[in-house]
Length: 305
Length: 257
Image (spheres, each protein chain N blue to C red):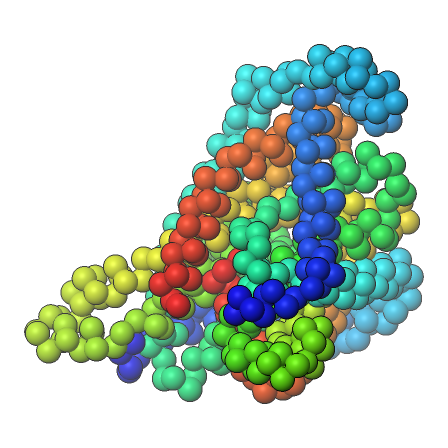
């Protein structure tokens, strides 16, 4: 192993570093720029912020540049209620969606894990297949169903459950339906992976010792599937917080989620510093669950080997 | 896991699958509806597909999307595979990334380049290479190193070993990674919106601007064609890889990303 590493020549290593070079240029640098703009002021110009970084002015210019940076945009985020409410709304939607996803995803994944061995790959494939089709199409499919003269109202009225068409669209209900529909595979797959590799003999042992099935489920199955549940929950929670398309197409206009607020600041108001400040704050906010997920993944990789 | 599904298990799987497939099925059926109104069934018809063929804007957007997807998937596969090799073999750079379309847009603004086709392609490459890395990495971890070592011991140079031994063995994962990168690029709205400029409207951007105005049967037809293409691609891919690898990789990806 060591020897083969030694044999690798330097040009070989340089090629392997290429992807990291790419990421530094197109990922790290842009992030630094976003951070810088979040500390700038809006202005009516192109680009629409001040100060503009200019290398030609030398050291004095650099100091002047640094003196002009200010955390005004961040101060605005914490004082203006619009942004605070937006963040809270995003966290609320993500938390409630994740709980509902757990409640729906668990029996679904459990059912697949208990299906006959030969069926399981097919069922997993069936869960994954809609995930391959466009996100936008899947959200759009729900507009067909939920709109005022859509299928859902049609069915409900024919069954005489409601008398007049209900407006499902532009509501929180529609947002939750869209979120749950779009993120279900993210919840089911890690749960299934955890449930599937569970040691069958543990369940047999519990049964042999006279433990009723429901109790075995709570005492043995659920604790052993917790890593999968945590992975699924984080996998859903993190992207839902920043979700834009679903609330924009299905939701109403009273309280916007943070992704929509960012989009508006950027495209409608052309307030780049505030938009950047929102993005930076969102990243910091999501860093905690992301690090948590990383830890979880690391542990399962080490345990699996 | 204990075998033998209870009625509760069967019902929950059936309901779950119905929930996943019903909306898509409804969308596909309505794309063949002769009537413009969604609730009124006017009989089967291909009218919306005919209309689509005359819609230059949508066709152009589709062509741009396909080209962006092909270029970015290829670049992402090369970079992602190299990153996976570096990660597994040299133990470099653990950890993943978060990506923001906003940050790339601002880079392009700072660099003062014309935004359009190539900026979207670069953005998509950066986004999707991480997914390719995850897929190829999982294949490299479960791979028998002694084959490589044997070749090297017999005097095969490292590059040739990589090309003749390693590459063919991880080829299914690379193919799966390319397909995933291609579909992700074809699907993306947010990053493309941030990194595009005048003249480069991708299909999702086009669909999004139409969808905001409400349901149009024509959009149902576009969506149906895309679903059919994806379904066909998935079936072909699983036939090529003999049904095993891609699915496992996809499941592994679902558990890791």
